[in-house]
Image (cartoon, each protein chain N blue to C red):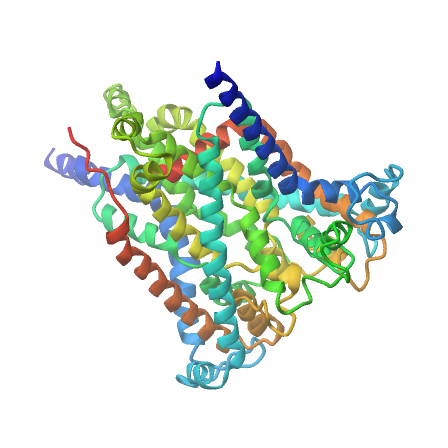
Length: 309
Length: 282
């Protein structure tokens, strides 16, 4: 009798413990994935960054040599940081500005806006694909459509390749990125619809012009969404790879050598896995700093509405 | 009277502006489709034109033959296999984890949730090299495993999206199911899943887009042309030093966009709403 009761007690878990275990059971896939596909690789990459590993021979520990080399002797590293920062600095604000501009045009309930919205979103659906990157390369090439149009308009006389010229190559990549403004546009559009109409009405009574309403009502109300878009776009801009790999191949003379492309080149073309790991870690720190700066400055320009209830 | 005309002028100029800008914006896509139907020697000779001198459907037949004795039928099949298997894993695992975070109280929940948000901000390139070394160790190179298996462990972005949605479902529903003797697992399957379908649809569509377009994965892990997905096949096919038939090349490029386009048409409304809500709530 007593023995039976004891076993029963052991198998029956308290409801709280049971709920806790069920919780872990549900998040288990993510937890396992986190350990295998994120935490372990990050830690092992820290170790590899201090070796001369090349996939073929044993890794030798070299201490901080890779990092020292990167900071003191590596001109391509500096170049790729410069290229990536320039790209991000132009691409992200221009894309967000354009997305907001289009969202402002589409915010009313005019006829046809739904169709326009979908059409304007189309480049973003296709934008990440290889097909589009190849098309972009050919359209901006010497014999491409851009030159043909400019020539027929009489704007240029001699055709040059936009992709092979050092002064325009990065510009074509920036343009390709701006062209894919669809997602921030939709997010802005949703944000614009959340701003209470009464704000604008009150401003109208005070005699405010459209531009002032935009500056003093629209922008502050949208600031949390601008913040979100800015953060996401900056991080993904830093990782952009496919476009420069296909469109310009990093050239001419490293003018479009994106950081991710440089890591790829070092690791997978030259098999310098240790060195490439050190490069990855440096990019993690750079992105960490940029993210922190965005978060810190957000105190000054992001306004959260306190819900009055 | 005067107000009416001025309003009419604004409307007309609005539509004119939007349509003109729209044409400029869609021009590259239309150009690609037009080039896929032009005679091969016309693509760059008459580059700006959007109207082929005659329609060459033959380009599609030529392009479909592929290269190195592997046709695009194989590449498309490979892409569909990889994409569908990855999407299934991503959607199911993300939904399961999302339910765990959204509805069950367990110790450590807050910290783990914070960890998940941090991994969302983690740049993927930090994982590139060590994951490759790890997959070499698993002997997974030149197989589809590195492109599929990691998706079976939930993706933070999608977990977060589905979580937001689950939190909008009234808790009373779960509780009444609980009183009826439903365990957590049955509540999840019978109550939560059916009510979360919009979020699951959004996840499926985005997961499909990203996987279909994925280039870096196949570039790193697939070596034999028989196993190529469409994106990596197009890249090999388009090598500027070897392409002679550009219209066949653009024909295959156009085909590669069709799956995404069809999904876009079917889920268009859904998507627009989905992006809007997820963007806002974070």
